[in-house]
Image 1 (cartoon, helix red, strand yellow):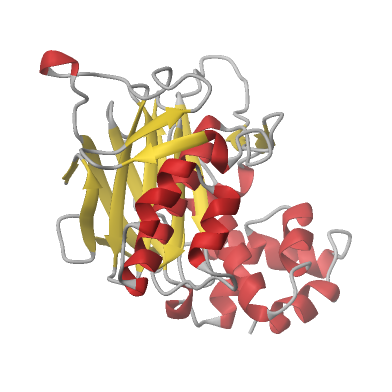
Image 2: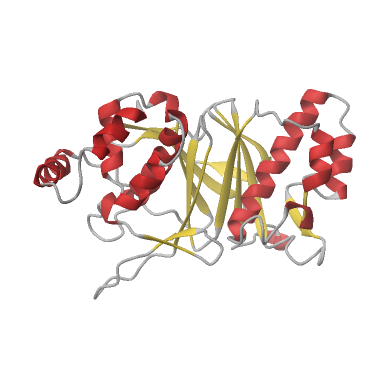
Length: 314
C-alpha cells in the first residue's frame, strides 16, 4: 500500500502546476478535526492509532500531503511498507492531534513547524506574531509497527513509550537485563521463577525506563538505562545511582495495558501534591483515532487498564 505512495510522490514535485492544483483540491476536501480543549494541570491526553485499522490507500495519501517534503522523504526512506506506514502515521498523529487544540484560531496541521532540542527531542516551533501567546504545550510520540501513540500535557514535561506485550528479545532476558539495567532491577527479574512473567516484567521495566528518558529529553546516550533504577514496590518511582534521592519525587508514572496487547508507560514531571506531600493522581483521557475519519473515547473502558501508578481516567 505504501508503495503506491512512493510511486505517487516520485511523479510529482512542488514545481509541477498539476501537483499544486491537486494540493489545493485536497485542502478544500479536508474534513474538520474534532476540536478538544487543552489538558488541565496534571491531565494527560493520550491519542493512539492502530495501523492495521488504516487500510485505505487514498487516506494514507492524504496523510502524506500533511507533511513537508523533508518529512515525506524521511517516511519513504524506511524499508518496507510496514515501517513506512508506521512512520507516516506517527507524523500524522502528532500534527492532527496538536491541530485539534485550536490554540491559534484555526490551526492547519500542515502549518505546524517543529524543532528539536540539543538531544533531538521534538518540540512545536510556534509562529510568533502580535497578540499570540504560545501555550506551554508538551507532547511526546512513540510507535511500534502495531500501535502509534501521542501524549499531550500542559506545563509538564512528558515522555511515553509503547511496547507489544508479545515482544521477544534475541538474547536471554537476564543476560540482556545485566547489560542495560541496574543490579537492583536484575535481582528483581531474577526473583521471578516463571519465564513468561519474567518476560512481561522486563517489558514493563523497559517501557517505564524509556518513558523516563524521553521525559528528560536527553536521549539514551545521555541517560543510559543502567544509571537509574525504576522501583515499583509501592507506586512507581525513579532513583538515580549518583544521587538516589534527587529525582525520586520529581516524576510520576502511569503504566497502562492498552487493548490487552500493549504496554504504555507515561512519565510526567510532577507539578502538584496533595496531603502529606503525596502526588495527585494523573488525570488521563484516552482516545483511539483514525485522523479525519473517526475518534473514540476509550478511557474508562476495558481498552485502557491501569496496571501501575496512580491514575484517574476520564
